[in-house]
Structures are given as C-alpha cells and as structure tokens.
Length: 466
Image (cartoon, rainbow, N blue to C red; front, side, top):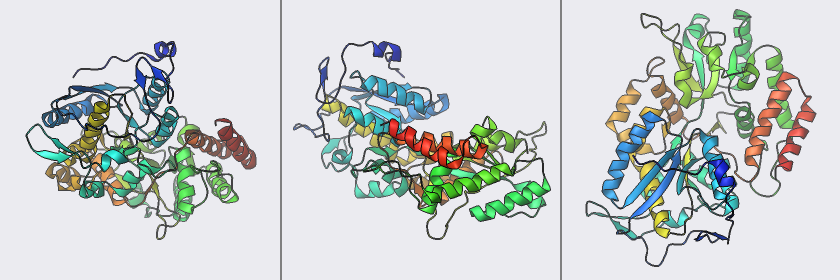
C-alpha cells in the first residue's frame, strides 16, 4: 500500500506559518463550530485522497489492507494513505505538532485525552451532522445507501464504547469506537485450586485473599497491578467519589474518601501484598509468569503477556484464569475502565475529504466482519455486537482457554462486562490529571510523600498545566 511521507516533527517546528482558528496557511482555512455539509453534498465522481494515522503493526496492517480493498470496491474514488506511527502517544504528539502548523491527517487513532488536546486547534470534526445525514450515495456495485448511520447501526455499538465519544462536556459526538480493551484479573488457577482459594470479586475479598497467599508463600508479592492511574480512577468510579469534571472546576479528586482508599492500598504495599508497574520497575506480568505473584491486574489486550512459557514438551507451568476486576459495589454500581483506540476526524478545506474520512470511519467501526477479524488478530474487543453473528468469531471464542487461546478468553471476559464500562471526562488538562493521580499513588504507596502532600501536589500540578 502507498504510504504517506509526512514531515518530521523537527521540520514541522520550523515552518513559518501557524494555523489557528480563523487563520489561513498556504490556502488552508478552517472555520470554528461544527462541520456543515456543502450545498452540493458528496461528489461520488471526485478523486479524493485522505491520510490515516494508526499504531498498527505488520499483522494488523495485513487485516486492514484486506478490508481496505473491500472498502475501495464500494468507494473506488477514495484513496487512503495509511501511516502507522509508533504508539498512541507518538500519534498524539505528531498530530499535536502538525495541527499547530496547519497540517495533520484526516483520520486517526485516538484516546479521549488526545481529542481534548486537538480541540484547541478547532480542527476536530464533530460527527453528529454526518451520523444523522440521510443523503444518499451510490456504491461501486450500483446499490445505494445513506451517508449516515441507521438507528440499527447506532444501536449495534456497545453503549459504553459509543458514549465515550461524548465525554467532552457539550454532549456532541467527537469519536467512534474502533477497537477496545479493559482491565481484567489474571490468576494462577493451579495455585488457587491447590490452596482452596476463591477468586475475589470485591476489594474486601481481595484483601482477605492477599493475606492468605502471603501466609502460604511469604516470599511472594500476591498481586501486581500494572497501572496506578487506572487503579485510582477506577476506584473513584466504583465508589462514586469525585475525580474530574469537563466543566467548571476540573480537578476534584482531593477528597477524604479518595485518601481513604489510597491509604488502604498503601497499607497493602507496606505488608508486601501488592506492587505496581512503576514500583516494580516493569510490567507486573513478569512476576506473574515467573510465579512470584499469583494475581495480576492488567489490560485484556495484553493477555498473551500473562501466559507462562511452555517447556520443550509443550507443557506450561500453570493454567491462567481470567475474571473481572474486584468491585466496591458490584450489585449497584459495577465499573471497569474502557481502553483501546477510537477514531477521530479532522476538518479540511475540501469537504469531500471530510466525507471520505467519515465513510472510512463508518466502514471500519460498523462492519462486523472487519471488526471480528481485527479482534481475532489484535486481542482487542470489537466495538459492535453483531460480531457474535460472524462464524469465524464464534469459533475464535469457542476455543477460549487459559493456554494458547488466552486472548479469546480475555475477550469473553471483556464482553461479559460490556455494561460496566466507563470513561472519564475529557478536557484540556485531563491527561495531566491522569498522570498526577498515578504519581500520587506511587508516592503514597512507596512512602516518598505523606498522603496530604501527595494529593495537594497533584492538584497543584494539574492546575499549573492549564
């Protein structure tokens, strides 16, 4: 596939003109507000080339290329230049720099915090006008369809994933879900069965289980939790305590209730019950697979990293089990964090590029066959429910186990929690809030700061970022 050659960040920084809302640079001019369809509508005869930034590796690019060929049969005049760019933060940083000089892609992988950052430029394209468009388009096979989404197509998105696109304080939709994951609890099935342990479903049960494991194996660290930030944010959601707000006062997390759960986990750390990625100096899956811990909380998309290596005869030292993370109130308010990329579009002086970007976004997020195959190859969870009607995906899930097919098992657990997903408000500064609550967790657990100072310092850093 043709690959777009983009200017490197250092070169971009030297460009003379800077594009901001209501400014022009080299003929580029973007108006503020929502995107409005032109009078002529979508021009099916126009040859349009759009750019798409992602983090896909070689295997996922092969899946994308296969289905892009199907997309081009439907829209033969739309040409896509796909640019894989490192990791998610690399995509964010490149787009941020390019937007500041009037450049940037038409379509990209994103997280909500990234979109809030991009919104400073006025370039992010709200999707509501396109989603609700009833304008007709003739496909390459001669059939007709509408530009927008039908009610059935909208309802097909997993609600928690779809609502993520509205976390910007104005109830407008800025993104569509592409490929998702969440946190799950990995546990050593053999160890649990041998010692008559029950997989904890609440944090109180978790504490009791940690005590028992420490008594059985004093040299172990019973639980590893990869993300301090996720842990803090998830506890706020589960306990219904303040974290952040997209409007008004943004940073709300300095509360007695939040200090209480952080202090509880600090006591766990002091007792040798837990560690985290930062405190461990690397992903806690390393401890889990080497049986230095017996539980690990991490991304469902990283299930293969929680799988111990097999010996020469193909036998693994233990079977891995996967369960939902513990809850504070599973009956009334269960919550697990929503992760994985969504797709964001950008305005363009050529409205046909906006149409083309939207049609590709619609295809990638709503096409059940593409979603199913991408999930099988990536380990992420599909964004739409009709993947369950795809035979290949049914077969994939049917093979789920705690061994070679651990990614399928992780996907099944994710899908069982689809009504529990939440996302945090996104605004300028929300990314800093995430960083700072992770830092304060690390500081309090390690004892490098007392709890009051850790919280007050985190708030001060957040406010300084605005």
